[in-house]
Image (cartoon, rainbow, N blue to C red):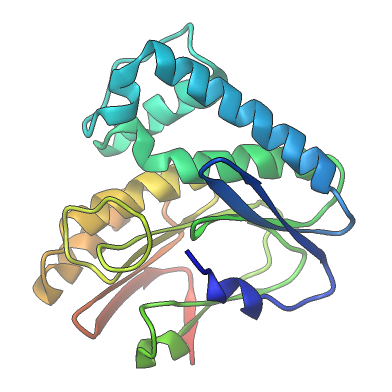
Amino acid sequence: MLRLYRQNIVDNLYNFEITIKESNLFIKTCKNLKEVAFETLYKIRKDLETYIAKSKEFLTSLTPLKQDKNAPSIVQKMIKVSQNIGVGPMACVAGAVSQELGKILLKHCDQCVVENGGDIFLKLNREVNLGLYVGKDDPLNNITIILRKSDKPYGICTSSAKVGPSLSFGSSDVSLIISHDAYFSDCLASACGNIINNDKDLQKAVDLARNFKETIGCCFVCNGKVAFWGDIELGG
């Protein structure tokens, strides 16, 4: 998939892409950490692939699973977060990979952006403007979300029934969750997207997102209508 939105990220950071099998990540750091990123992604994928080979249910379940204390740490957290939100553990795989990779990069650099199919782990030392991509030539693409500068990384994740590879049982154009944890944001974006069947369900999604104290903000789009909530500001 051609990710045109990556071309719109402009600042003075070093940027690169890494690809291993299905994983294609866009990364920004304060220096060239491509080798570190590639090695880290390889290790993350190895942990996930090894566990999936032993537990097919982890790959296919659309509902929460029981915790496995013998599983790799990334798997244990995917199971834990998905239990809390009520979805299958793979609902947060992209966010999990972004966050685990980003945590390693932050040991070498105080700023980074790790984008994995629209699911983002982000730590920047400034205010952040996020572009909203609803679909080709959609006027809502002019909307921006402004995030305050934070000492903590952000987890910014999206689910969509119409754009990108996300599995969604709803009909949302965009289901976006912002928190300080990409595992959480990814799982909740999926859960909220699943309950949006038409624009009348936008409030239901907002209500669900508000139920979790971890939610900093949310934005949902369906049939040309937008609903948002939280400590965020919309521009555009």
